Image (cartoon, rainbow, N blue to C red):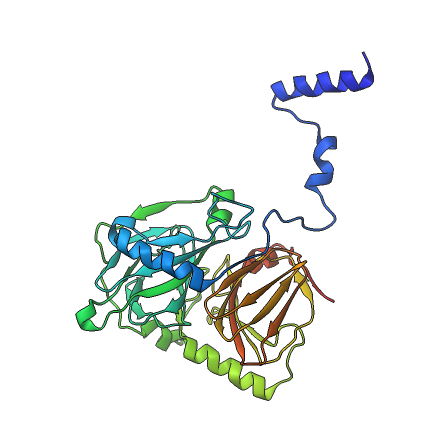
Length: 347
Ligand code: 1HN
C-alpha cells in the first residue's frame, strides 16, 4: 500500500476513535493574523424600518417577549451573531406595551434610535429612553421595558440591542429566569443612580462591587457635550476624530465587562486614516452621513444605519462635507484587553 493510502486509512481509523491529526489543521488553527469568518456589512435603517414596524402589526411585545429583528452577519446566517462574539438586534416597543421582566447572564446594552418616552427598568429603577441614550442591563439583573399609552403621549420607540450572546454561548455560561411579575417593583427614583455616580463623585463610603457600571443610563446630551467641547479644545485624532469610551465611574474601567462602548465625533469633511484592531466592532451613526471603508469595500452611512467591522480589517471613516458625524460603537475590546489579546495597528 502506498504511503498516501496508508495515511488515508489511518485517518479514517482515527476518526472512529474521536481523534484527529493536528498536522492537518495546525495551519488553520494558528494563523499569522486573524481570519474572521464574519464579513463587513451594513444595515440601512430606512430599509429595515418597514419590517420593524410590520412586526408591530403582527405580534405584541408581550407575546414576542422581546419584539426584535436580529441583525445577522451575512457569513453567519442562523447564528444570531453580528460578530463572532456579539449580537445586535432592533427592538420595537409600541405605546401601552410591556416587555415582561426577566434576567439572564448575558449582558445587554440599548442604544436608542427613534422615539421618546419608553422606559426600561433595571434593578428597581426606571429610566426614560431618548434618542442617543446608552443604557445598560447588567448580567443577571431583572429588566423589563414599557411605553406609556398613546393618550399619555407614548410613541413607538426603537432601539439597538447589543448583547454578548455568542460569547456566552461559546462559554456555555447562559442562565435565564422569568420574573413572577410582568413589571418589577420600582423602589428607586428615576435618576437616582445617575445622581449617585454620574457627576464625578461617588458616595463617600462606596465600595466598588460587581463588574458593571452602577450608572445604567448615559444620556446622549451629556456625552454629546463632552465631544463638542473636546473638538474645540484639543487636536483631532487623525484616525478617530474625538473618540471617548463609556466608563464605570466607580473604577474607571469599562462600563460593561464584556462589551466596550464608545461615542465619537468626526467634524464635517473629516477624512480618517486607516487603522486595524483585533476587536470586531458594531457601529451606528447618530448624526450626519459619511463613508466607511472596510477592507476592499465601502459603505455610505446615514443616521441609524448599523455597520460591522470584523477583526483586523483595515478601516477608515469619512464624514461628508454637509455635516458633522457622531458614531456610537460597541466591541469585544474589554475581553481582549483583559487577556492581553488586544492588538492595534495605525497605518
Ligand atoms: C433580551 O433580554 C432583550 O431584554 C433583548 O430587551 C434582546 C436577545 C437575546 C436574548 C435576550 C431585552 C435579547 C434578549
